[in-house]
Image (tube, rainbow over all chains, first blue to last red; front, side, top):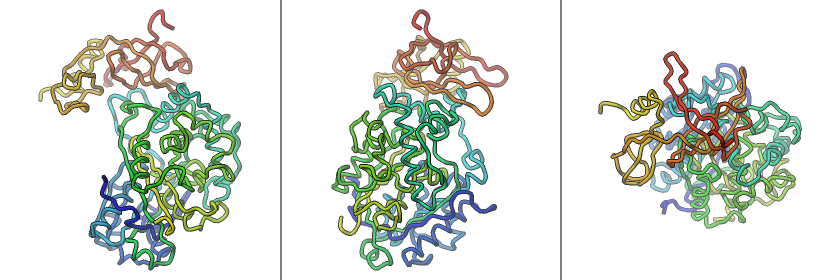
Length: 384
Length: 125
């Protein structure tokens, strides 16, 4: 249906820029460029090899221009699609299409944000909506809290179950030297933290950090000649259901249902075939919704699924193995970091948090207020 | 075009009315007001005035850095459209999904336009 070819491109390089609280004066384009040079170094390609550039940030209206100028390149293919945190999953599908069509040979996807350094208000200018703004929603958390209220009402999901998502993320983060959070976290500590938007405390909500990164994609043949084992794009899918939370059709069902279905169909895989799961965890309700909508458990059972350490290290399903947006890093639009972690897991490069024998991974991006959903399924050489 | 959908909506609020659009082509209500029906390819949208009765669909309590916590809710109006609003007159934590509510106009004063808020419907608390 989509015309995209299973395994038609591979991720050959992946790297983060500096993370956390970066040096004073660095801007998002600096972090994109730093991520790109590190990702190129990862695969052995050079700036002159890049003929496809995909990027997005809330801090530069024309980031494609600024990044091209900065790097001194004039890419044949350029795409600055911006749909929130899932933008980079959309970019993967677009890069795959461009490579397949011969519009470019080497595509780089980059992100950068200095939202911690400059403040969230500065990094992401609020848009006025005359039908929502008068009620002073604290966005995005109010929107996700509304979704959580509905999930609790319909399925009996509890605050303790949502807190289990934060605790699992923290346990993974303690295995990741790059993670922002360094101390253990318990369910009572999550529940007892400062309430921001009921039912969420500050520990149910992602971090506010700086950071950036990049991934490099190319066609399979060239991919196999490079430094690291290629990680193939097996499936892509996406869905947009709304922009504002007051227009979301059903607050308990996300577009991940459709994006997942499309990605699985293209990959010719099911949820039960996936070894590593990376889900955009802006809020603790998110992984619960996405585990349901992506078919890892039935609708309404996500709360029970994440409890008892099932998604924590040593549990039944490894979810958000880098520590997630909740405990590793969250520089505004986090989707790219899910892809970077999936690549590391499939290469066997994930150190203490490595999932044994990982051959397939799903990286699911969420944007806006559950508005845009985009799923990418990745696999090792053995899967193509 | 003489008046934007927003201006028409606001003029109803100034009269104490909650207005919404009806799409004859789709046979359903449309909210927020716009120029094109998102459920059909029709641009022929009619204005109607809602009864003002609705049900809480989702609810949260926002805790600002300064000031008292306040309710933010999504209300399903009886005519089949949903809007963001808040429920007043009761503790924000007491606003429950399924609560029947009735619309009234809130006038913040100054330059700020009037907007719809809700309170528990009489006799149904």
